[in-house]
Amino acid sequence: MKDISSHEQSVELLQQLGLKEYEAKSFVALSRLPKATAKDISDVSDVPRTRVYDAIRVLEAKGLVEIQHSNPQQYRAVKIDEAAATLREEFESRTEKLADSLSAIDAVSLEDEDEEVSHEVWSLSGSAAIRNRTKSLFEDADEEIVLVLGDERKLTDDLFDQLRAARDRGTTVLVGTVSETLRDRVNEAMPEVEVFVSELEWLSELEEDPTDTVSISQLLLVDRSAILVSTTQQANVRGEQRRKPCSARASRTASS
Image (cartoon, rainbow, N blue to C red; front, side, top):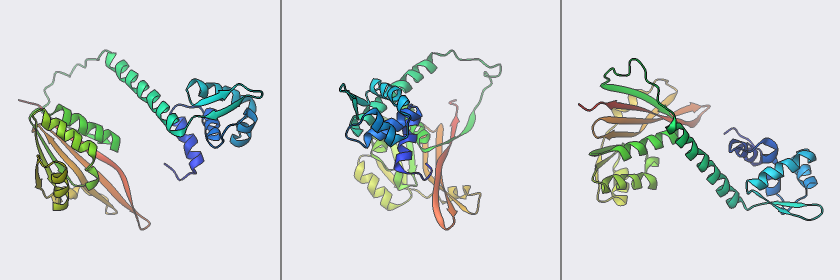
């Protein structure tokens, strides 16, 4: 996110989570005050006083604001962790409804969809999207998972839990690392899994821009039919190294 103040960032993030501008500004103002009247909120947030009342009604309906029915009425924001939990539940509920709605839509048939495809390569960008694709491939694995890690930041508790789940249902799990240090960390976390040191220098030739350095963060092979190659790119800008969002290329070969 661009370099902005915590106040501006909070307002912007609340809007991304579904609040309108005046609602977000009113909530941020209340989070800075123990309690406040509509006039206080207007003074702190620069939201017109007449619009504060509408914003508060929405925030109250969402469970983000408490009201004291005094004269004048007083308002206060719920605790930050409570607000975050409430917004998270609403967001998750909406995404679940979206998934159900999309799943219920009828598929459209194309004239050439019956053509046999033995090999396909697709690209995917974004850290969250790649984590979700990796998890999906783990869950789809029936026989074997071969995972080669080139970035120590990939060694997360979630990753280990997903590998354990695959192993527990009978899938063979092999983990490769590019260094003995990483191998030791995997061995310590998952002593029951076979771990080996693998060299990935040949993959570094993906570099195209001489000012950028492309590195392989992960290589995943599932059931010897699907492969996911994840990369990160570091660009040297004015003497600083900046890590660009990771991307991945997925390839799948149809079973014979």
